[in-house]
Length: 559
Picture 1 (tube, rainbow, N blue to C red):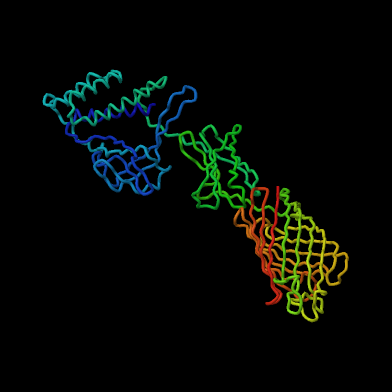
Picture 2 (cartoon, one colour; picture 1 turned 90 degrees about the horizontal axis):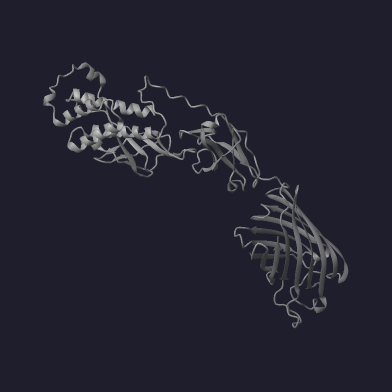
């Protein structure tokens, strides 16, 4: 409040000089305006040559602050400097600024702009001898000002304001209207301040007081992280002088220093010295490196970084979970069937040399998989299946392409296998896994045309994450029914449409040296979060004249 009083007091000095030295052409003062337009390239201020502004002149910007007193409920209005700018172009009423990088805070539309007009050099006035003025020859408006000054010494602010307002009405064309306006503004400001405070010291300050140095906030925070994806993390900071603070904010960004895409989180006061905030879940769901810093806002609207800075932030690592550390995952039931024909065109009604021989089988399998995620064990799967088909054998127990004088219907052998299986997958890391399957069952027919117990083995190598796009290589052997090696690519790009493409080299349905090649594609559709369907098509060949097609489908359910 003393600051307001001193402004009004000092503003009287130009009038004393004016009345004693009428030849003084200009007086000290200020011109106020606002930022009326703002974009990334230009700032427009409603000050111009009419207010004495020139290109390169310094214009100080202020941020207006309005708060409500917590106890009285009254509005408290003040403004705080955010820096100075220099206009590059100046018109009669507007000025354009194109550079404002040195401001304490980013400028905003509506910020106050103040131009301090150059003042007369005090020394120059002091060296001049006082000019004797014949007051009888003063202009009417100057004489009236002198009378107002004499008659209002010691009078109240209200009385002085009314006297100056009467002068403005009496002399609307006076050359002293600008100075009168400045004086009226100062007195009205003092009057408003006096009405909102209990006591005002009206004495001018004896000496300029030095602005107290802000207290050092000294924020303390421990090392944050690392954490695993999906985990909750709370950032806590302790501040030495929380009574000087208005708010504390945590700023977080994906990436390292230099990022401009900061997410701000208001930290909550906890106890006497602590502030805490939870990291946004959207930033912690995947492995990444996060940059963060903590900024405090003082009660005078000044900001101060208390943990890291925007150009030198602290880093937090969200690291991938080691294999085996996840919680148990989904359970999935899958049933598939497919008809595999290596010799398309076979007909039971055709006989004799040159007729197509039979070389086909149908495969049914159903299994249940459970994602264990225990240490290195990622998943286990159990199930059962059936292989049912036939093959026309030649003299060396291989599947023949056509009948001949040596190969007839009597050489056609049916085969049937009912089996059960169990398999497990180990995760060496999130991107590499190995799996093994053991199977056993009862085989009827085939090359030996007899029933016997059958055992089998399958091994697989996975490259890529389990539920994402991945490559699977494998080999398997099933006693005298045959062996195979395969390479599958699982494509998980479309959320609802999983795809698979693969190539298989196999001797099924009999164990021998007559290997065939299967090219197979598979497309699925996830109906909802629980059910899915699958379609299978493929092409098979043992030789150029020994070919056929594959078709099939499947149904899945998971929870």
